[in-house]
Image: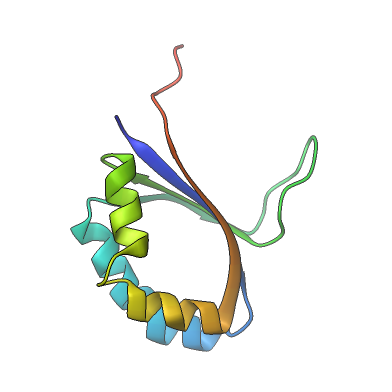
Length: 100
């Protein structure tokens, strides 16, 4: 069953994030079968409240692949970089396409 990672990311140092985190983290993401689906900072909250930040939606083959990517040893040094330049709210969840 496909799984999704939804992140609200607040980047405080965009230059370091783009240079030292994104290229390698993206390559690792692909190695775990991850696929970026959408990234935006322009969203409208219609009801309730959501965290501030860049909204990122990624798809993985399953929930374990998403966890293995984000918490795994290959990503760990880049997660340390990310933590030094950004804060986030993140959830991993399984889902199936909604019926039409």
